[in-house]
Image 1 (tube, rainbow, N blue to C red):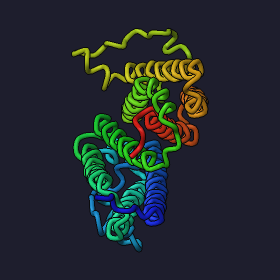
Image 2 (image 1 turned 180 degrees about the vertical axis):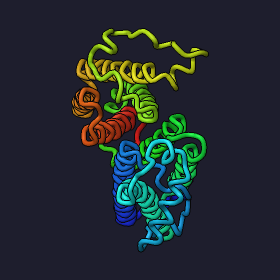
Image 3 (image 1 turned 30 degrees about the vertical axis):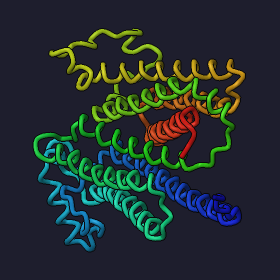
Amino acid sequence: MTAPAIDTETVSTSSRSDMRNRTAIRLWLYGVCLLILAMVVVGGATRLTESGLSITEWKPIHGVIPPIGEAEWQEEFAKYRQIPEYQQINKGMSLDEFKFIFWWEWAHRLLGRFIGVAFFVPMVWFWARGQVEPWLKPRLVAGFMLGGLQGAVGWWMVASGLVERTDVSQYRLATHLTLAIVIFAYLFWIARRLAPENRPAEAIEATRRHAVGARAILALVVFQIFLGGLVAGLNAGLTFNTWPLMDGRIIPSGLLAMEPAWLNAFENVMTVQFQHRMVAYLVTAAVLWQGLRVFADSDAKALRMPVAIMVAAVVLQVLFGIATLLKHVPLDYALMHQAMAVILLAIAVNLTVLTGKSRA
């Protein structure tokens, strides 16, 4: 019995169609990742301008429309005057000053809603047109669910500062930030997995020797961003504004001043800043070590440029971090430092994909 003939032209046409679909979905996911990067920066500005508690209610639909007219602005201002932040810190604030912080928080929430639409609508479009491959469908649904969870976590964070505190909980702020960058990394990972695989089998095997290092760096970057969330939550960057010494010493005293000892890692301003510094050194050392290993491996030439970019990015990030600290956290430096953290995360995800198995 003879085997059925294969229509090579049909196969080729199908393959080209699959590649076009993957390219379209990949570009869409890159766009969503850029929006998340913008969201992180706007969130950082919202924190640094102390704007996060200016809107005291969560209205997923109606909240899209800002106050219109004097009466509505006075109504919003009256709600803000009921919370501890106003009564203990901003008492006597004018309506114009309130509008400044209101617009930052409103923009942050609006951008979050826009990201949800920018993800959901194209996903439905691609899905309805049969452009989403079976393996990709549950991953996209998971991404959408993570986005919904992030909205709930955002309100959970804001709610922590409306009753007894004058600020949001640093635990919840760090959770909110970490979930944002996890979503970013997850979507960027999917996008990179959709890129064409141009490496021969032997090159894939060579790059996989560096997979453990790449994954370790990725984990360290995520952990460091979480620690940065704690720093932001406690305003720890506004203290001990010297480098390389901290409180006049390499290892300052008072790191374990709180009882029980574990509390220092989350609530002691000195310890929170110190551990953020130390993990920054660890990330830098890990990236440099990975670079040395890759450049010493003659069979891993495909990784040299990505690793060189990572080394440059981590050095630049360290410089931004030091400048932000020494200048007492000016808005522009702080936001650049936060944006660079997400960019470094993207570079780490890319290296993880390149050192992994052949793409789907």
